[in-house]
Every structure is written in structure tokens, then in C-alpha cells.
Amino acid sequence: MATDPDTKSFVLRSTYRMNVVQSLSRVGQLTPTSIAQKTGIRQPHVSRTLSELRQEGLVSLAVPEDQHKGRLYELTEFGEEIWSETNQIHWQNDVANIPSTHREIVAHLHQELGEKVTGVGYYDGSTVSMYYFHDQMRHKYSEEQFVKSSETLIEEFSHTDTEAAEIVGELRYEVQSFTELNRIVIYSDGGFLTIGLQSECQFEYPSLIEDCQSILNDASE
Image 1 (cartoon, rainbow, N blue to C red):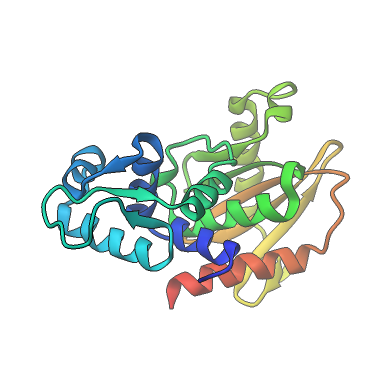
Image 2 (tube, one colour):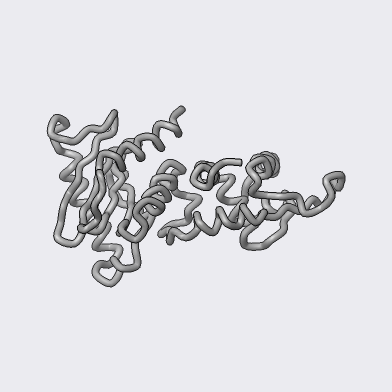
């Protein structure tokens, strides 16, 4: 069985797996037909996803194996634990609508740095979609303020001379320091990931960027 970080990554990488696990976590026991109706996923995809989740020990069959009608599935104790840990992140948007690589990056940041991560969003060239916004930030800034500042700063970064930007592998990034927070801007998938961190957060930026690079590379293989 995979280690917890690997298993969380396994769930986060697939919208199908995210939706199936989420549905089971809310209801308890469901048939593939019921899951398909609740998630809007075609039943063959649901069946394949349930098989994948069973292989990872996240889902079990709640009826005898030889029962072919009314086959109920449920999360195992391990599955509930993994979903609980994954769901500790207070996602701003429907997590299933966030690109899988970005979900993994947010989960990795949250696991490594916890509450030191103040916010994560993605700028597609016109607007910022917030993925995560820490409660402490809400007392100082509205989400609209955070988004607007992100858009302004990322616009500046997008015009930065490539030779002046930091490079880790093929990943371009910049660290912007402010009084209350630092912001990492990473060029990714044709847009920009923006990661806010508490200003007192001390760690090796290149190491964190390499972790992000690894997640992006794994997805492209």
C-alpha cells in the first residue's frame, strides 16, 4: 500500500477519484449508479474509478463479492483518513474544478508549511482564481484585495526579462517580499501560480520550487 502522501496525491490527481471519494464520504454507502447520478460521471468511469480506489485500499465492497446487483461501496477506515487529511485544506473553489497538478501543489504546500501558507491562486492572463485563502488573511484583507494585488504583481512579473528571472530546471519563478508576507510567482501551464507565505516563514525557496517542478513533471509523463 502506498504511503499517505503518495495516496493523497493519487486521489488529488484525478477529478473522478476526487468526486467518487467525496460522494462516499458524504453518504456512506452508494452503488455505482448512485455515484454516477450524484457526480455526473458516466457509470463505466465510476466503475473503473472504484476499482482503482479498491486497489489502493481506499474503498471496499459493502456486500458479498458474488452479489452482482445493488453492489454497495464505502470508504475504508484508511480512505476516510486520507479524505479527512485532504479535506483539511479550506479550498476556495470546488476542489474538483481545480487542475490536478495545482491541487497537488496546494496540498504539498499545506503539508510542508501548514498555516504559513496565506493563499494560493492562479492567474490565467485575465483573472486570478483563488484555490486557498487562509482565515488569518481574511481579518486583514478581503479576497478581492488579495486577488487584485496578485493580478497587479503578476502582470509586472509577466513582463520581467527572462534573463533576470530565477530558473529552477525549466520552471521560472520570482519571490516578492512585503512587510507581512512573501509571494512566490511561478510560471505554470501558460499562466502564473501565486503563493502567499507569512513573511517570517523561513525555508529554502529553490527546494520548494523543485517540489513544484516534480509535481508538474510527473503529470506530464
